[in-house]
Length: 123
Image (cartoon, rainbow, N blue to C red):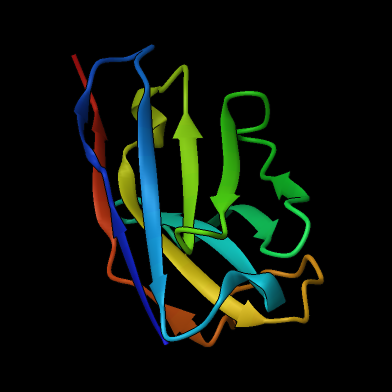
């Protein structure tokens, strides 16, 4: 099982980015995929969770209404569309996976993690 997150970069406040999480070694259908982030000097924060089976998702209050998770099972890839970015969104973003038979469940004990991608929101 491998995960690779990419798509980070430097963006101005109010801008948008789309992160991708490419999965290999398993198919998304039975997995829940979480997006997490960690800013310098802060604890890791769970941003969103999406079911690879039916696409249902949930979000942290801090990003609700601005971030949207989606998945393309044919490409075995999960996305995080981030709009209305704020400086507080600056962090390294990680994707993680757990076999949940499609149940929407993401926590900090996810067994599989990808390397992070840095998102910097600054003018």
